[in-house]
Amino acid sequence: MAVGADDHEVGPDVVGDGKELFSRTAEANSCFDDQVCLPKRSGAAAQEILKHLAISVRQTPERVAFQVAVLSALSDPIRLRSLALIAKDQELCVCELTHALGASQPTISKHLAILREAGLVKDRRNAQWVFYSLTGDLPAWSARVLAAAVEGVSVTAGHAEDVERLKGMTPRPPRTLVA
Image 1: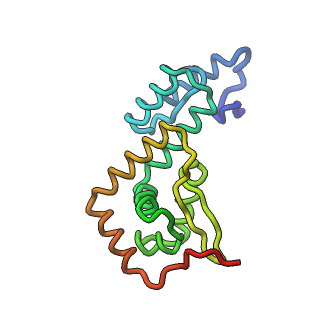
Image 2: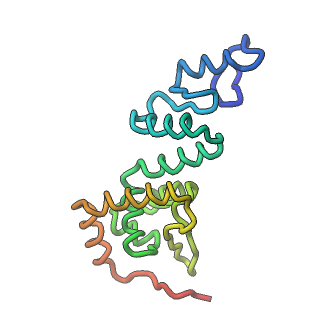
Image 3: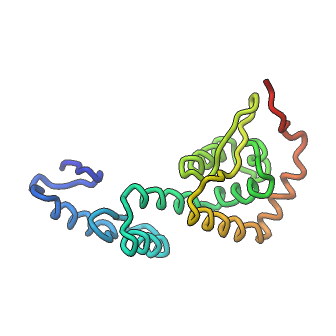
């Protein structure tokens, strides 16, 4: 088996314009046109949202990939809880998120990297600390989605517990720039 441009296995009989490859890909995935395919294991809600984004607006593959990255980044509870805490405090260090969420430093760092790659957070280094804040230059649709996600998490009892754990952390990293 060979691997096609879209990283799906294809047989040696695939030639021509790639429509046979698309039909094989469509069997293994949920495909909306010849540009956008999601694994069948994707949730029904995500597939419906992406179907709408990809078909009704006919966006470029790059824009759809960005939309998928944003929606995927918002699909994890740790990432949502992190975003809600960052939105509340404006800026948090990895160690503060580790304390508040009760997760390990590698776990928090991995999730923050996903949020950064999706363009939802930015980071800055201050001595040995890395602080994360929400990006301010998101497209309007993603800013609305992010605000709705943060609002949804912020009203939960779990968020209140995260906030209380964060308040109990002492000492906390300094916010002043260190030369």
